[in-house]
Image 1 (cartoon, rainbow, N blue to C red):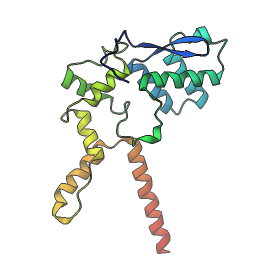
Image 2: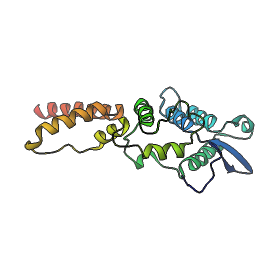
Image 3: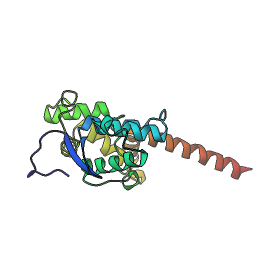
Length: 199
């Protein structure tokens, strides 16, 4: 959680686990790398877990002899609590941003609104600070335009035909790959249903 009253001493925070104090890297780029690893189909579940642990805990080698996978999972959960203020499940919110897919839009948005080069800020900007700035981006930035069209309702009624076409076109332009895949799968399923009903 972001607080104006807490002194920020960098991007590292400490979490307590068993009798240890473990340093966790909360920089936005580390958190984004963890997200990328979690979505990478190349890695199995255990590989993702260990890679996330290695990314979040810079001194992971100190604990290798002591920690098993259960310990690693517990440390990751504590790290995410430190990063987010609480552990948030993926099902709690509809996906409207993909930090990997939207990287160019996000980068351009931070440059436009804040003059902040996110590449130069790697390792120096915490996830909490990144999210505060992200949530404060103005509506005319590239990422906020994308979010607007991803979430806006398509008007109904014949009097909105032109506006409807325009919004549908923009929704498809800004659509996340995961949503496009789901939409196309639903279309194919509907076509098969129609075919089966016609028999």
